[in-house]
Length: 602
Image (cartoon, rainbow, N blue to C red; front, side, top):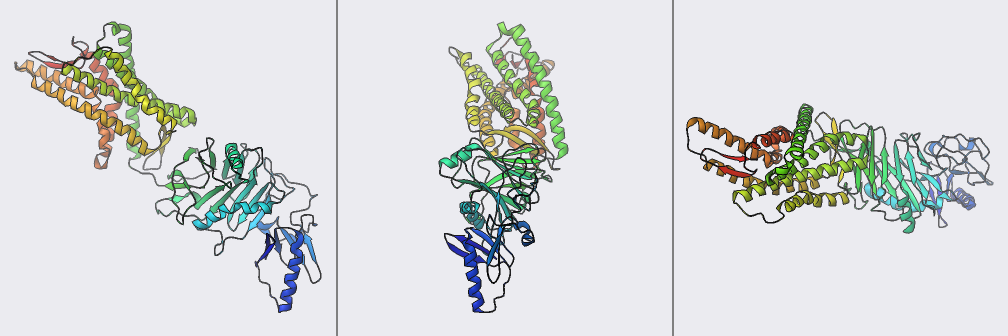
């Protein structure tokens, strides 16, 4: 039987049958309860062998059998009096550092680096045993955590047990500080003052000082963390990690934190599944889980949810998309590494030749091409080092390399556009005006920055994990939000592609129509020259990047290989084009029409 007193109203909860033989016995029993409840304690346990006062003597025999409820007060009554004993343990007994008892830490007992909490046991919601709690009950429990502050008395921290629900609560002090609440694999709750490498908990919630200060400013007085077991996802193809969710409450709305609330899950066996940190606002009878405001970090066998707000949190485990096999992934990785390395070498040679040998007599077309080479060289370099930096786990370095790679990718696309524009102006012999190259260079290098800087400000660059059908994965630094990636990158290149493809078709048409009528041998030579010119234009204008549009359905794998081969070796192809066309006297992007040939030359 439990007796609780709130605002001087007494409620009695039966925990074991008591047989009362007659009405007189009932009246006498309730009178004894009334007398014993005057001890001033808010939560006491009633039985035939019990206790109630903090200053009462310790009785080991009376406290046997309490199990996980050790640490509460218990009172003993008989026919003549009520005597109170303490189940907290003898105040003078030696302390044992590092010991906890079934989810509680008893006063007088300390754990290294932890605070000393009082244990609070609460009856679960009506018609609910606390296991597999309904969403609305979970939300109600979190909203009512402030009612437990009265149960804590002079203690600053407390462990909370509500049926199978476990957690901890701590009062906020005027000098706000970090709050660390851990839960072991067996369900024990530990409230830490300091965190170090020796902490051995399976879940750890770290609430930053910024959140505590914000809560105090908004009249919040506590921080509470509860672990709700038995929670299931409606989607049969996915599940919550450990079938549980975490609720975090500070008595007021906390959001838009610059210092994130970190939720650590350690020793996680993902079994090939994809982990995604989700949050639910605690509103409504159904749970709508979103990723907004939370980032998922994975290190070794641990998962960290970094969230900028307070609410309910869970880690959703989903099967990998499996849209590419492990063998294809390995092959594409080798092709990319070899192609990018080869392209970087030849692009560097071309830049060396230009700046040390031919810079003084370079045409406008050659200068434009050199800018394209510089963008592609940096893009290949940032791509090759991306995975290595991602594996370091340094978030700042990851953001930097992701931003550089994105910038150079957009710059490469922009220079494709400029190549097509220059070619078009030469085809139609349109005057370029003053400061033509200055305008071109400003367009080529400033336009990508206009896209990248806002994405940096919005913190869109993050770790990205690529999965294969066997559950293996590779990590890189890129735009984590797939919608942002599609909208920005595919949309950007789509605009470039429409213009470059139109110019490509116009140029090819000019080459074909101006094909000279001559002898067979000369005709064969002209055909080879024109074929080379068309292929050069195809590479120069980045038309091969359009294979990304076909990465769907039955063309998925084929488009991956074509895209990877053509684009990773693009720098090498452009070098060959540059060297061969440099032998001709006309400028890049112009059509040199003679009686025997028509080529696009450098």
